[in-house]
Length: 130
Image (cartoon, rainbow, N blue to C red; front, side, top):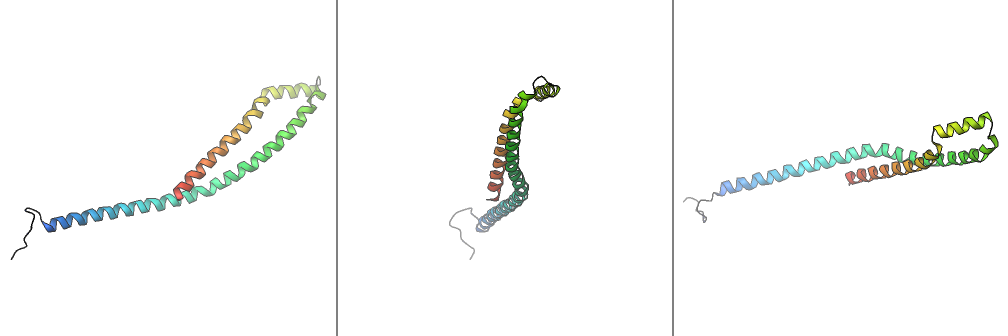
């Protein structure tokens, strides 16, 4: 006696094959996502090392720049003692040429923006690892 199907026109083998194909497609998708996750974690690990160096160096550089600004302030305090001399005129010309007042304002802003950028890269890397 042949298999009787309560639903006319439905083929149990075709239905089973369709479900098997769907399960295989889901499995392939899961494997692809797992591979992408492993790749992202590997890339994140490789990026994390140089970002760590940059982050550390920015902190050190900020300290050095602070020290240089202190020395610069001492030189600026002594500058009036050179007024009218050749060295005083050369110093004033150099100060104007390099736009020292602008640099003293811009350098801390650049350091802060750079640190913010590195922190953002660190977060992206951490998100990739997670």
